[in-house]
Amino acid sequence: MKRFLTALFVFAAMLLEAQISPQFFAMHVEQTQSPWPPTVGVQFSSWRSVSSYVKWSDINLAPDQYHWTLLDQWIETASQNGQSVLYNLYYTPSWASSCPTCKCSQYLALGGCYAPNDLNLDGSGTDQHLKDFVTALLEHVGPGKIKYIEIWNEPNVANEYKGTVQQLVRMSADARAIARQYDPKIQIVCPPETGDGQDSLQMQYLASFLAAGGGQYVDIIALHGYVKNPEDIITRINNTLLVMSKYGQSGKPVFVTEGSWWTATPPFSGPEKPGFTFRQYLSVLSTPVQRFYLFAFDADNEGTLWNPHKQTITATGFAYQLFYSWLEGAMMTTPCKGQSGNAAIWSCTFSRSGGYQAEAIWDTVLPFGQSTNVKVNAQYVQYRDLYGNVYPITNHQVSIGYTPIWLENTKQ
Image (cartoon, rainbow, N blue to C red; front, side, top):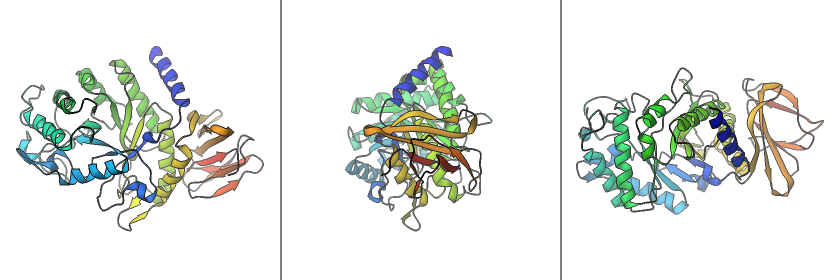
């Protein structure tokens, strides 16, 4: 444990010396009717295919029968706009399923959460259905069009996956072997779990996958980032790093391939969304994670940067535009954490060339709409909020609350 923590601190120090890359910002787009995000000022680097109707079962309609039209459209749009593609290899077609009439969820086709019927519980078998699909996929799109293949989706959730860990390891091995024949540069992303345990912050399924030998078949370790409190994602990521260390996987890139707020019904409160989103981005940036795929640009319940019904940018989308401009290219000089003497108040600092200094600061305990006054460093002369306002700082005092504000040492 001591050796792991030392390595983590060194890694974190290295990250703090680097500029925040545009590659960190990634997301999902669900609907082809939505504008491509950069055309409305929402910048991102990589698109992930989940919830875009291009699952394995959506494409492979029958043996040797494939419907590529929609996937081709997504890949072409991403390619023309400079985004890489993460294809999520997920959801067995009913005709190939080991339980073709079993219901997985009310939204998805029968049988898809079960492993293919040519794969035994212990991972033995031909696995020919998956091999054929990966072969057809890579032959169709050609090398370089898909940068990442992610194996399955949330395997620790019962309505997403009812197979065994051994079957998942075998599918990872076969997908990697075939994909690398067509594109030696393609990278395999491990099955992304959502977190286990009472607090949903443990990573027990990842541990079982790596213990079964899955680590040798993946290039990137993935997790999902749905949390009740934005800062909780740091604990889940740290638990991921602990599991990676235990099973000899330290040093591999870590991606959060899906994330936003987690809520039961009713939906998450609209006014809180901009602040939650900024806090989650700040929290993930305070860890070694290299990429965060927000879910989703045009979803109704999570992310919600674009309203597909009104065809307009939302308040959260406007906030994203702002904090992207603040963060991209900046250096995080201290990671986000609770302040000494008052752990409820979180802050982190940033810099740019030319002497620019900034600090994000917020209160993690106060309910939305409440505020408290705090003293800030004398170097800061103004602050910005997520609604486009700029305010002068007087007497080194600012009012903070649920939504972070952005302090600056210069007026611009």
